[in-house]
Image (tube, rainbow, N blue to C red):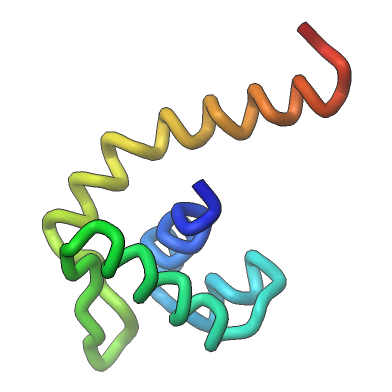
Length: 85
């Protein structure tokens, strides 16, 4: 799940540097993890354009389907760490 936090941050900001700022990591770290996710999935997820990094149609579909699952996952982990249920 760790690679997906980079995916969500870049998809939402459409900028690798801003995603790094949001995640409090360096831009090269974001780029490295995006490439790792793309290798893992065997799909190109982003296209670099003049005004930023743009998700491919496959990336947009993945984002729409996976974001609710990821949010639920983070909520469950947070509850667990706080000693709830």
